[in-house]
Image (cartoon, rainbow, N blue to C red; front, side):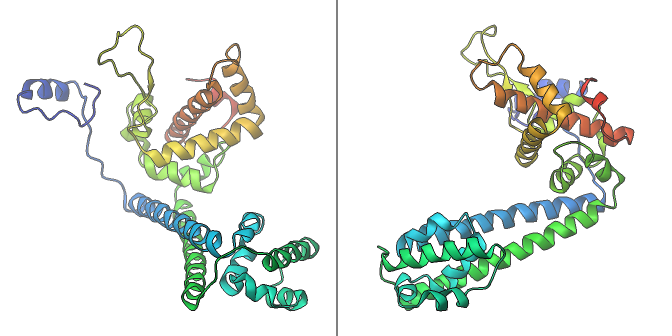
Length: 308
């Protein structure tokens, strides 16, 4: 009865016909070729990001943790330099057998020379006292290969990002979405690709349902007056996550959204998890605002938060 594709009982044909007559059904969408390309690129980017994360975990959990665990603490400080060391000198005994000047000059020079020098001095010292396992030729080959794969995937992500931006610039709605605080190139392209034609939605409830931000309550075995409605999470998970990140950025950096967020929290500051709930509410509001701007061909202004 909530308009989703979960009614499959063959004996309920009358109920199905009644739902269709009320318009409680999903309609087939035929997006434009550019929107289809944009959606395919967004999907490709998500797959590449997953592959990138997988390679990072393989490097840190299968290689660093086993052969040079002391280097892991520096990984987040300077990932690129750490990858250079993993690719060439993952074996700490090899670093320990070199003079520091030789070790320093072997690696590519980067910005922040003094900080880099101190960091490499610590790594060289830790290599001399490392508790890592003994490495073989196969392990060195794996380290070399995984780092190269990770960097290749990183380049492909950047190329995909550039192509997404190039295609998005062909839409006038893209520049309008960029005016919303918290909306960067990726979030704007994601919203544009997901909504597509804004006129295919009759009201804001349909837009919220698409993202899974619509309220839903499981009433089975519970009294209807005590059940607490929650967002359904049955829509586009990537869009929902991206909008929450945009809401977090806007509510902490933009004055208009900071005031709106404070107003939502007023009187409820001590409720458990209220900050996350209100940011979810802001994310849902942002989606409706984005849809409205796309329909009306207008840029964002503070009045957009006042109108429901």
